[in-house]
Amino acid sequence: MIKTDVIDQIAFELFEAEKQKKAVNKFVDAYPELDEALAYQVQEHLVEMKCKEENTKRIGLKLGLTSKAKQEMMGVHEPSYGILLESMQLFEGEKISLAPFIHAKLEPEIAFIFNKELKGPHVTVADVLQATEYIAPAVEIIDSRFHGFKFTLADAVADNSSSSRFIIGERFYSPKNFDLKLMGMVFKQNGEVVATGAGAAVMGHPARAIAWLANRLYKVGQSIQPGEVVLSGSLSAAIKIEAGDHFTAGFDGLGSVEAIFTE
Ligand code: OOG
Ligand code: MG
Image (cartoon, rainbow, N blue to C red; front, side, top):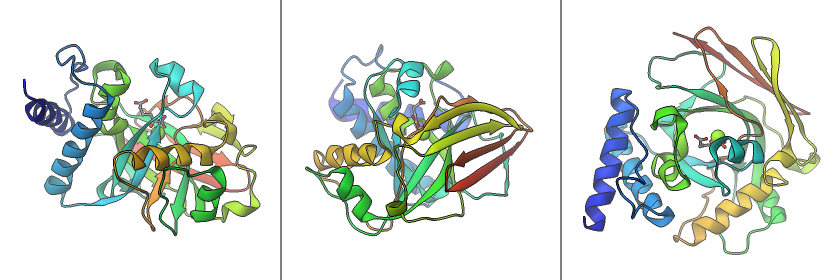
C-alpha cells in the first residue's frame, strides 16, 4: 500500500473506533511499515479529522509513558506525545459520564502552562522552568482505542497516545518555589490510596519530560506555543475507572484535583 493510503486508513479506523466505542486490534501486525515516524503522521491526520468533526482546536500537548510504572505497564521503553484539543478539557466539579469511553483509566499528572515558546533542539530543565508560567495539579482520562490497552509504541502514537479527556485543577503556582523532583503525590479512589509517587517518577524530573518533548518536536519542525498546556505524563500506573468513582490526586504544595464519574 502506498504511504498516504496507510496513513489515511489507520487514522480513519482510529477515528471510527472512538466514535463507535469499538476497540480495534493493534495495527503493527496488519501494517508492518507502521514505525514511529509514520505513526506521528497518522496522529497528525487523526487530530485534523477530530478538529474538523468537533469544530475544535489544539490547546496543548500531553506526554505519555514518561514513568517506569507506565512503561512497564505497557511494555515500552520510550515516551510518546499526543495533542490536546479544547474539546477534551473537562472541569473540576462536573460529573463525568463514562458513556463516551471504551475502557477509561485515570492518571495523576502535573500540568505546565507556558508563557513563552519552547523550541528545541537544546531545551533544558532550566529552560522549561523559565518558560513555565504556572504548574497545576491535573488528571488525565486515557482511553486507548486498542483492545485491552494492547499496543506497541507506534500503535499508541498513532492513537494520539490514548488521549481522551483531562482536568486541570483550579490552583496555579509558579514552579520557581517547588522542587518538582521531590514533589509527593497521593492518588485516591473512593477515599482509598491506590498509588503514591513523586515528581521524579517522570523521567527523573517532570520538566525533563517537557524538555524531551520540545526537543522531539523540533525534529518535526514544531514547538510548544505560548499559552499552551502540557501534561507531564502519569506519576503512577493508571487506574481503571468505574461508574460512581470519586478520585483525588493530591500534590505536595499544589493541593489536589478531583474527578467524579457516573454511568
Ligand atoms: C499511553 C498513554 C500513557 C501517560 O501519562 O503515561 C499516558 C497508554 O498507556 O495508554 O498518558
Ligand atoms: Mg497521561
